[in-house]
Length: 217
Image 1: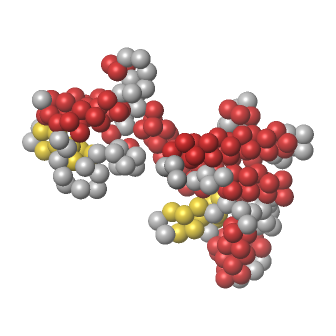
Image 2 (image 1 turned 120 degrees about the horizontal axis):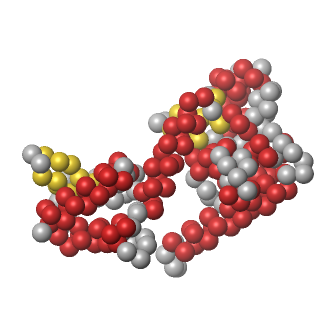
């Protein structure tokens, strides 16, 4: 029964193109060997019990009224974010040297200034593979953070939103803005208050989600 459930679950995820998102979601993963699907606990080689596998199946099919047509929304979201991150990494950022060149200062001076600003939530810095990325959308031609974005950045980062998600939200069409790209809309003085209100709404939603998921004290 375990092998049948495990193979059916693996086939379903592969058909949806979501199998690669299991590890990122902290869920059990699997491999195929000699035509047999073997599920294991996250980060280990411990096999999943039949009960644990059944629980995982129910968890992934919990969205929707009919499990046969369910879609694991969390994995879909992770896949979309992975694609969006890949697109941003093509040419959407600078390193310390790039910012230093724009500002006409040394790399050390740029690094110090950026981290000091980040401590005040006055610039968005994103970590990737041990490197610090400075998303370029937030900078003007002199390498300084665009003045109209300062309040928006502070609102989002003070709410504890993951920097990658802040980057994605500010650079892709947002439902809260009727499909406009937030950082572009913010250039228009008449649209800036709308962007700021949308950022506040997003921050409140993020805080609410964190409060609900946090254990009571």
